Length: 54
Image (tube, one colour):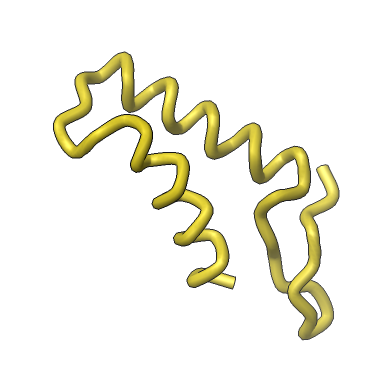
């Protein structure tokens, strides 16, 4: 799960560069949260890697 979600975060983070200001960090975190909420991220439920249910 961590490797899957870290890959998602790295993919999104690569668009923002390594020296992001506070506004870019907020935008990046909003985009990551939105991706996870829309089902692109994964969580472990009953021993299986599944899309989160919000």
